[in-house]
Structures are given as C-alpha cells and as structure tokens.
Amino acid sequence: MAAIHGSFTLEKWFYIMNYTMGRWRQETQGEDMMKCGICKAEMEEATVSYTEDIEQGVIVIRHVPAQVCTECGNTWYSGTVAAQLEKIVDKAVTSLSIGSEVSIINYTKSVA
Ligand SMILES: [Zn+2]
Image 1 (tube, rainbow, N blue to C red):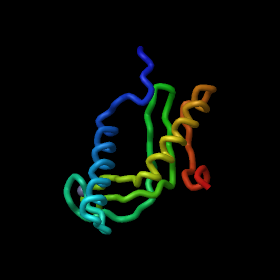
Image 2 (cartoon, helix red, strand yellow):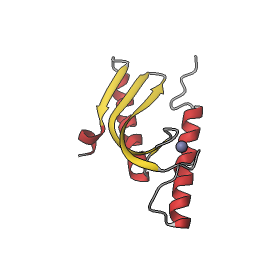
Image 3 (cartoon, rainbow, N blue to C red):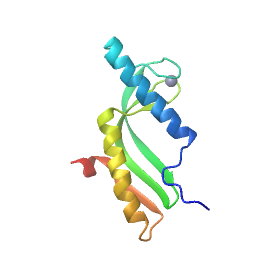
C-alpha cells in the first residue's frame, strides 16, 4: 500500500472550499456575520474537535475554535487556526511514527 501522507479526501476538499469561500466573503463583502458556504445559514462561534486520519494513525485535536453552521453543522476555521492545525498535525505525525496510532492533542495548550 502506498503511503500517502495527507491524502486528498473529500472532507479535505470541502475544508479547502470553505476556507477559500470564507476568505473571499470577508475580503469582498466585509461581513462580520459569517454565513455557511453550503446552506447560507448563520455560523456561530464554537469549540470543535478536528480529526486527521492519516496512514500512520489518527490525530485528534480538541478544543479548536471554529465557526459552525447552525443548520448543517458545516465547520469553518480561520486562517490562523488552519495554519496552527497544520503545524500541530505535522508535529503529531512524528510522534505517531514511534508507536501509538492515536494522538490526542489539546489545541489551547499547544498554541499557548
Ligand atoms: Zn450550513
């Protein structure tokens, strides 16, 4: 089996779509109130768990600040949070390769 790190899943595609659309909305319309990229309902501040399923195992990052759609549950991360998640995942991949198949990280603690 080929070891594809960060394989291009549908979930990831949605994530990138939401990220891009969120940025576009903020830049072009200057909206304070976030709208869902899928159903256009209102988004609200929430704390979620971000999961990354990779070849080496599963990485779960808890207490991640995000905007969640009140209608469909679609989750959107700000640019800062998305960049931070990427960093945490990179670090976690290293620890996964030395044994455990599950890595649970507290976002708040790893950012502070
Ligand atoms: Zn929605």
